[in-house]
Length: 71
Length: 393
Image (cartoon, each protein chain N blue to C red):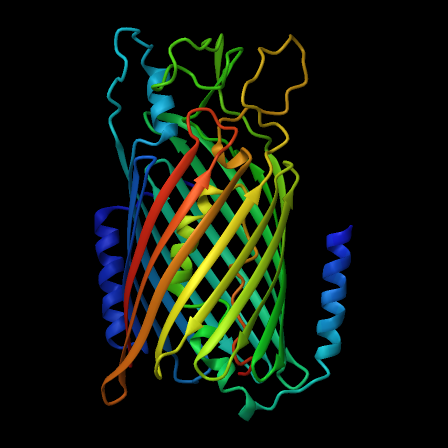
């Protein structure tokens, strides 16, 4: 219940922050590789290979995306 | 769906097609992953991949082939081996022959970018001598609020066929349905946040066909497996049997924060729970340093902890007749466990000719897994490394 509440609050905060528009010319730093959630595909796969197949849980962190947020 | 075998010829054709397509592609890459641990297991995984953008300039297709060559005499192998061979009290440390297996996987995916909506789909096939898996994924992502927000939804389906070595009559199946919702938000020109939910429902055979569970002994090990010979052996050994249904839920919150042009930090947290009673927390942190343009050095730390599945026991009694049994397991992944991982990586990109770039990445990681309540295994120390080269045209 507490976790659900925390995530609901975060979603609400994200929804409010959606009102803030960052212009495309301001996103240069966000497009750098170190700001990507997925990171380098091969390196991300290696961490999953090394850990997640030896654990009882799965999912969540392999959601890619992020970066400059523009097409 | 019938079993498919992955013949060497098919592998060769797939690999050659991958290389041929990479010659005319936007990007082609090779990588090698190597892992070794104190549980007598090594994994070597070569991978080739290629991608190309179609003439409409909005559609990208990708393909990859990966092999997993696994050699091991892990606790699973040692205990299963000792179960098949009755214990000889005069032999304190019977040799266990390591097993070598190979898994091959091919992936195909396509992405089409519209003005504000991106559509994507993918398919994979994974095959080994006793396990075959097909998986499909479809996703749609939309840019919102002046492209400061990305909302992605995805659905997945996979169908697995499980066999058993030496038993051609054995065949079971497992179906999985998944759904994902990802909200990515640019907060400032230096900060980005992501919230994700990942859910799945799996129905079918989810046990190991090779693991046996001892009942009525001091622990669940069938046979000695190099354990204390004074322990009370199990009275009965039964095949591992997990519940046939499992629903999994993962919530993720993570962010990236830049400090000028040459440094950044990342934080992430995952909360996971499922209908088998496994509840876990994962925390991740990273710092990145960009010493010069197109060079990145990253240090990553990961902590993981989980509770046991509700049917996990370090020792099972022999059940009374007509008792209600939910399942028996000797799967360390369903025991209480925690791990710490530290990894260092370097990525560089160089222009080697006009409109041709070479990317190089290397990562070295170490992980310590701790199993406080699993008979036969207390800790595993693992080292892994990845080297990757990618050519961009």
